[in-house]
Length: 131
Image (cartoon, rainbow, N blue to C red; front, side, top):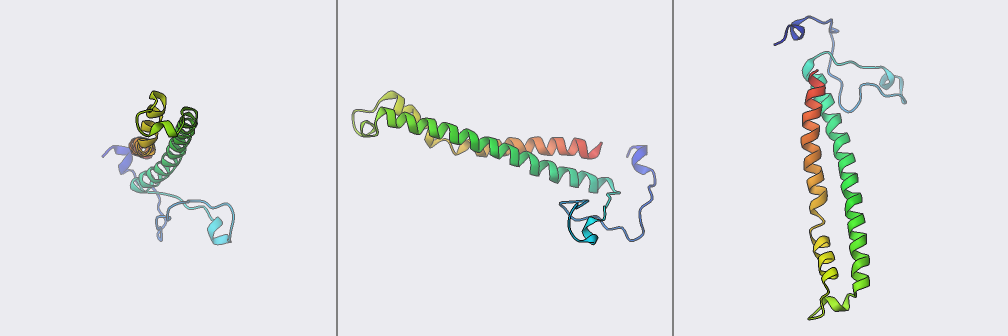
């Protein structure tokens, strides 16, 4: 362990790690408004990691959902322009076929965004939480 991790910090005798999600709640009853502190490195790391995962996943999934809506809406309009009736049988048009393929694999986008967000959050949350 680094020397800074071994230094003794004053920790209250009846200290309990605050529960997630908040250290300080601005509104509510007086017992919730009291600020709480984190004294142990593991607690700081865990708190930072959880909040980072929560924020990264939310932002990435919103962006992924937006991408799905844009592509789906564009593909839907393209299918309308090319004609749905031409999709069946011999009269399949190239543009409509490409749009249909995009729509079929569209569910992958939020999954990929979520996985990327998870990896980024674990790395970023760990680095920041342990600094």
